[in-house]
Length: 291
Image 1 (cartoon, helix red, strand yellow):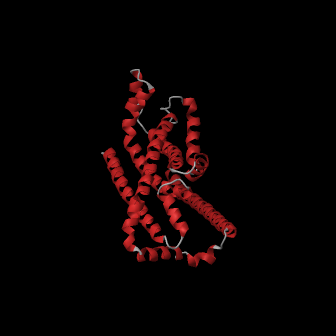
Image 2 (cartoon, one colour; image 1 turned 90 degrees about the horizontal axis):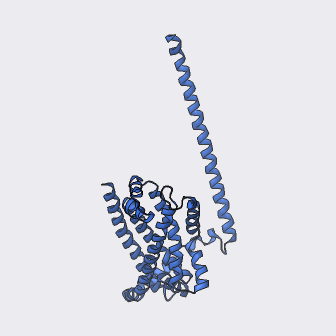
Image 3 (tube, rainbow, N blue to C red; image 1 turned 120 degrees about the horizontal axis):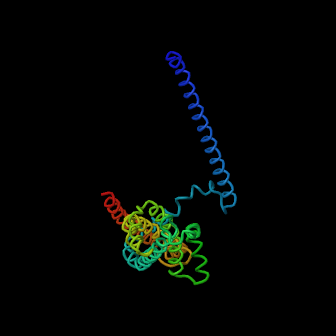
């Protein structure tokens, strides 16, 4: 019997190996077909967009460096005026940072409540969990610029529509991130507080937030970086801040390219500065949590 079982083992190994190789070949085939479909869709989508464009992409490709070259050349000719221009547009930069900061704070508070109300095991009304999750999905699905355009039509141009638009999108995005963190919390503390008669807000404040606070703050800082860029972009549609000044200087054309260069320097320096500061604090929070 032992000889029979040993003699049949190589055939079993060969069968397993053949089955494994067949699965590998099948996965490679599916992967290749998926890649081919993706390439076809990308090429066809590019062709459709190129046909609908005012000018052909390939015809204008050789001119891609003309505008940056004009901006840099004029800025270099008027380089003595750059410090004064930077000081001139610094209040617009402060406005952009204020828009990002206030919208991040409001969005973080909204995302906190949406995440706690939409997390299984923590929600105050478990039957409404799908509702709060769909609300957060809708809030982050609509781009900030679309919300801002609607609000500008209603409220007029200025920083308020930009702040509201970014805050709505931020609340939806952070609700998703916060919810994923909250789902991994230890519920023993929450159950212990519930056994003492603590209210839902007390259970969240004392049992959940101390566990998830480092990750919450880390995600909020990351979102603040993103919102600085978003607030600058929204300025192009009349939402105020540095983006509004940049749009005006770029639309004016030659003669004000030095102003565009000064605004670019301010915006780039601000983004790099806050990126480094927030990255440093996020690393401290995650390292402290790991310890």
